[in-house]
Length: 462
Image (cartoon, rainbow, N blue to C red; front, side, top):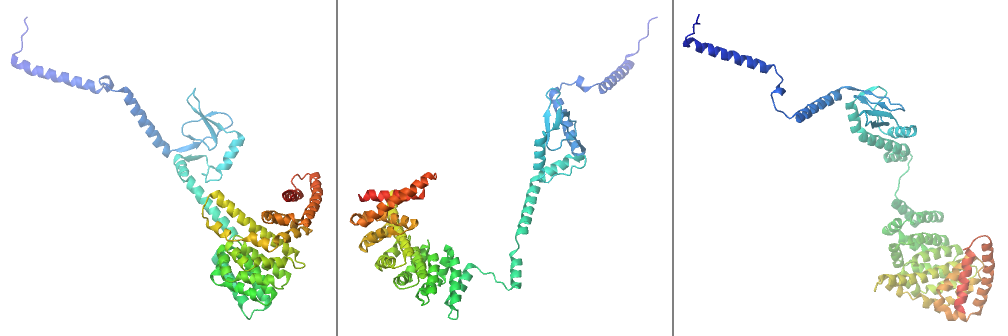
């Protein structure tokens, strides 16, 4: 039997239905398959992004989770993820297993580490756990906290030893005690000294206290600024020897290495007044203080040295050392002359070294004709005769001055037989003393130096 075929008008709808059915089946199969099997992708880049997402997620989880504190021992132990390592632990990476391992440091290093860490603020690790956020906060504030604690500790230490000035002033006010500056004290002392109602004892006490303050250069200049220096200079005219003595004592302290005060003192007539006291009959103690003031005024001040020579100062000093019972003053005068001679020599040497053609200091010293004045006033002979003094210290200063005057007084020394005999006698004496020093193990003793000075003079005079 021959099959009966369908008419064309019915075949078209059946074809369309079959096509839709096949498309639906294909779409359903695709929806249930792995997309990697049908797509071309960069597997390396995809895996990297996936690992980054996992790490980021792990870090976010780690920030919020509670970390367990790992307790290391003397042996290496593997550190598990999420465990916190205590400070001072020794951590390494095991290259074979890839795991981090932890153990305690050596005991001595561990203890030192703990001692150092105790200085700053630390977290309370009495608990077994703390979060990573706690660690971050602690590390961020560690330096700031240490500085704050150090500053507070320093302030507490200062407060323990010192008290606020307001508190001290309040207590002094209650005790009727007034806090004065050095300037205020000096003004009060000058007023006390210059007051006609003050007794002699009060004036001497005021000068004695004033001398303590004017040792400082600034205080001495302050004394000058309010007129106190001239008041003390006028005190040299007093009829009381004690007032002259202590006024000179104050002036000597104020003049010392203070050019501004020295200039004002010369202009105020201090040099003339000091020489008058030395030239007149006064107690020995008063002359000692006056000589001290004169030495302080002349040293390192060539202008004052010029005025000293013009006022006949060398003659005043010559008469002073020739008085009876003035050996102590004689040694001081010889020391002053030695200092003045060597000052000028050093100024000339300094000018040569610096190659300064017109130094002001050297110009001033060249106007001080000291060496000719010493020879004219007989100081060559006076200095030589002072070698008869018994004290070793006095002989040392005289020998120094003789050496400084050698170029000026050489011919006079040659004509003085007494000087040669004295030097020969001292040479024998100091040879014996130097030998004793050598026996005691002193290779460069005091007496050997004196013997060398004597030998040098004898060699120059032969």
